[in-house]
Length: 181
Length: 432
Image (tube, rainbow over all chains, first blue to last red; front, top):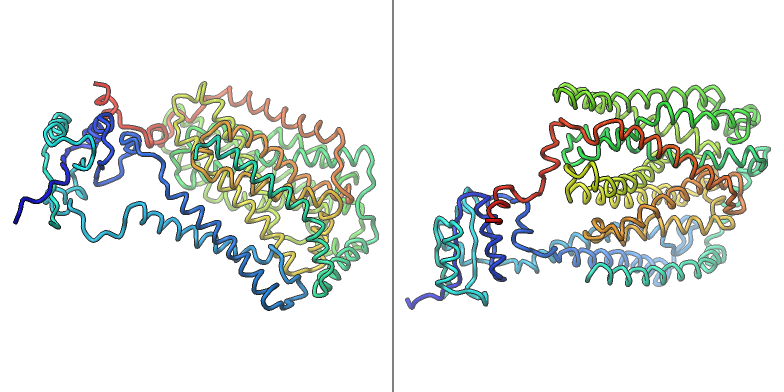
């Protein structure tokens, strides 16, 4: 087997305060392709990582607007245009009776927008992640905290980044390799 | 998209929709009337008019200085009462959910709810007096023996039930509000858990009593202006609008006072949560009001439709549209964004707009009885609205300043002030 390509450095930390501190330092060092893994949500981590607001809301909104107008459009098309049918002496079309259906479709397609937008932005589904090859990383769902910096980051340097992570108090720094190769 | 740029686009889009709606109004009406299948619907409207006017009294009471004052005062009173009762509900759910984030806002609500007694009751007296003398609620001048609609409702709609019932409910509300504040202030001194338990117990049964009494009060004061009307969700409708305007008011008070005495306990989370609740009740109000309208429109029963038929006459139609777009669509679309709920440039004008919209909503309920042909603004309206609001604002301010600005030893105070904040140790690390 040829030498597998290095994908990044995984640093392990022991406490929430350490990982918060490390995230701030990595952020301040100007890295862009990196992530933090913790067993539970740590309040304030999005600020510490300088994460922008999520873009999922955009997909939700587009889904909702689509749902609303498809509900209105569908009922208008079926009741007034394609097959006019008088029900209960009511007008053939008014937004009033079309509203409950449009409203439900707004909710349904908003939910779809959220779900699929989330999957799209996270590049899911994904069958494997190189991080899974690390034995140590399994404890990210138990009691350890991790920072992962990718080699693809323009600021990445095999020596300096490792040194930076070590000075931040990492209890271990491990190189992650491309297991597919 | 940056928020200011978004706002410009938003205002432009909303103007287009507004112009289109108002311009297309006559077309919509003509469409309904012109379609042959709409005949039954139109007939129902005509019947509704007959049903309403066939009870041997004119469409509305005669406009005199006293009735004019009575209606303007009732509108203003219902506006102020909204904020008092919604504050009470806020306290109830705070205890029921064992909430943490709302602790910094609790004293604002406790002092607001306590205004129900004695001041709310004092402010109610002119309404009781004018109505009993026959200047406000038209049914007070009708003999139930001559009016079938009144006859079946005379258990509730009689002078005794009206006056005694309202006074008793206000006393009960006052007792409940003062109990909550008493528990809270007592805990300031000793920090004992017993006060939290007492408040929870009271909130447990109090929330049911609250739901029933709010409905009864709104039925008596506002819905009985047209005693023939049926709508079981009318109380919820008033409640929904009340919560909406109250969260706007609390948001304003919080943003103002967090620069002063509330500074140590208020975080971004508190502000955001209040913004979220304001947004949530924007939707809930629309949901309730639409449901009421939709059910009545669909069933097309004369004893219900006449209420909305009256509110589509003259400029009331425009008022209804303004409520639809101004009370719902504008705040709904504007506040969808997370950052809008935190922006004072958006929320500041929105608070004033919410006051205006809620007042208009109450006006839409009360005033068409006196002026069936359209919106009619007299000097009494701003005088009563401004006068009552200023008086209650002043009274709130006085009691708010006589007590500590937040529950000093509330068990969840620490959670409220540290929630979603960077851990201290991490902050210290970053400053090395």
